[in-house]
Length: 374
Image (cartoon, rainbow, N blue to C red; front, side, top):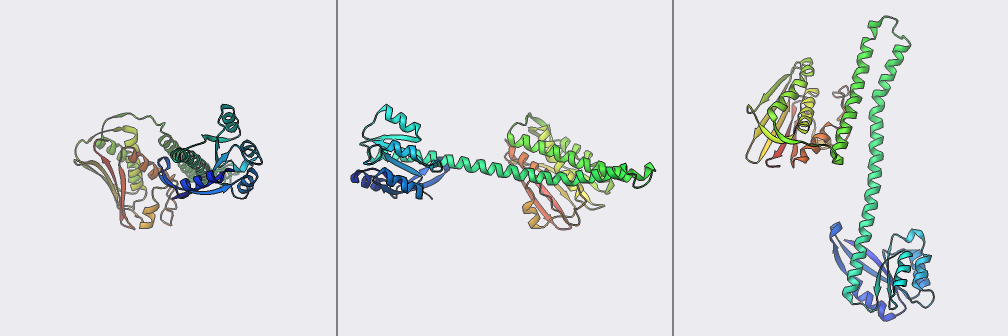
């Protein structure tokens, strides 16, 4: 429940009491923000009292009469402090004219209500003004949140890039200063470490571009019938070299062919993220299994590994941006921390969801569920 304060300013006691009877405690639903609003009414009989009340505690809505015993409503609008402009003013007068309405609008009035008015007219104007007010506030909140998220994003990005850039710079100094002597072969490991760090940065930038295209809606999508078996096989082949280093067994289970109406690059993102993680976080001599299945309701992609696994707390954090579960077992494993976030967003494009089952030191299973007909 949102409570909005209304300050009614009029020199007629009957008008003020009438406004209080109609609006004080009145509730309405603002569909645009999916919330209920309640109004509380305060009153003032003169322009100076109204200005004092606004300065002490600005209301949300101002019902302002044109003719007042000291200064008129136009003067009140003109003298309002800039920081009180978060409220909306509704001009009420028995002396309705185009000139008055134009002047009041120029001085900040949101709407105009001519006397005499019925309770229904008052409620309508108040409901319209409160909708406008709350939408404007919501927009400001969203803009502030967007700035905060952008700042946090840049902060985290800077942190993620600092380590590999520093490592490459340190290795280059080793080369420049010939710290290890003049024999070229001694610097082979230094060059390899630099290349590995540069690959980490390249993947981070690529993942950032993918994430940006998906979230902005600017990613070009070509929906056509593709074979998920072939997509899975390509991902396994791409991970083959890394799997061979760890002596992993790669296995693909499912039908000979599994057609799906989808974008080929998006399916590649799903398979590549799942398979590469299953390989990276596996244990030497372990196994990675990709299973494909189609039911009457959905298409399932299931990738299991016999790797290091995760705790329940780790699983809860898994799909956040730049999230990498770092401990003694994962410290040397490079990654952008964006892969699973991208996986989740791509899956949601198809109305699907991602499920995770994991146990420490026993492995993890990721299941992507894609509804049929999406």
